[in-house]
Image (cartoon, rainbow, N blue to C red):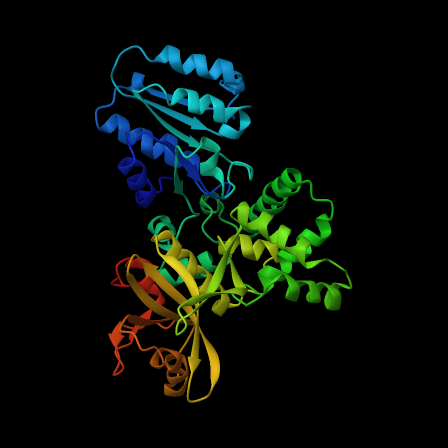
Length: 410
């Protein structure tokens, strides 16, 4: 099955010959190797690059296992360079090589060598990955399939695709399974045998049960405001376990470093400042979130909000949670997303359904207190044609938002 990942392929193409190591990062099994060895390598040969000038090494393959030795890999690459034309070094699973940072920094001295690497453990995929190469790294963040990518290869209607995606998410290999039981088994095994074990091994976590409990709590309250102290109180009242706030913060950092969850800060719109706590967490993929909960609690409102957040990130926006005072009621209210791109901004509310005028009025109320002229958008799960109402607020359906990437207009 061929899945076009044009967004990421374009980013790699744009970064060719920029003198930096291109680092393809993202949660394990999201398609990084496919992007590098299938899509990008095909682009190189299709644009006239001699196949002999593409040096491809997959360190997890039996045939190339010997190149895990840093000296062997370094000398092998140097031996392949026979002339002054540009060569391309594609290295998969770089974390399997000891001292890979030194090897890659050494290879960067070869002027006609363009370097691309992927990695698949939480050490390599930490937020600090670019610093591994002393400021010489250029990161391309890859996500699981977004809905439009999923829909492009899904056999069925839009509604069927959404129902499937909202439960099982966009990990590419999910699409190879036809039975629901097989999809669930794959995702639960991926969650427990890959992601959890990586985090536990890397960080030497002793209280593994508490780590799993924390994940369940965060997954159950996805999109809800929280902080380590609130989670500490939850452990005391629900689990009868004393888990300190610093420990919980550390565990949350582990999850964020491994790209399983993403933390979103609150932004005071009127005060034009960030509020450090509480904040929200969203999962990088709805299927992983649901597998964490053994496919219970499939609330469409929370899942839709999580999918919208991921989509905004994939499109390259900076996203915060909005905090806005309603003066007439003298109370603070929340705007789901404050979306920024450079000097441009828009505000977004996510609502599963607006069956009545009163519900629409409730969702619009926070927008009416905002005194700037940036775009205001309500995304609803209802199947509607996009329109602007009398307050200048754009109402669009989830389908249009997910399929038409220019709907925000910023």
